[in-house]
Image (cartoon, rainbow, N blue to C red):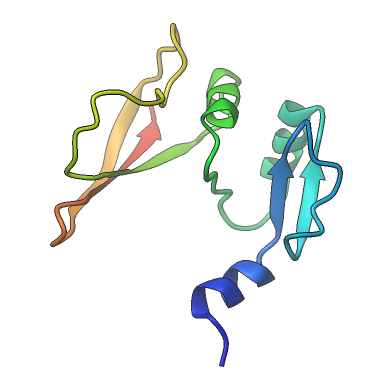
Length: 117
């Protein structure tokens, strides 16, 4: 019996954007994007298939937002105040969004999904 989350993640295609890595051998079904990130993401978006999700890189999110490559933002807001942190949007960028969904969870976490207008 495997790990349900890991089993699903291992079967999904993954794209690792990095200027320092030379291989993605640590992750199954992974492709390295080391340069031409904007062009590579545009090509991925043009392919038929499911949504592309981003996890773990505010630098990549800023780059994609600045180049109008994000169609929807799914935000999980946790009931804790840290006082500082990384910004979702880069300084000077103005993005018009419309609320698609707001769903609270018993833990106090709220999922908010926004699409571009």
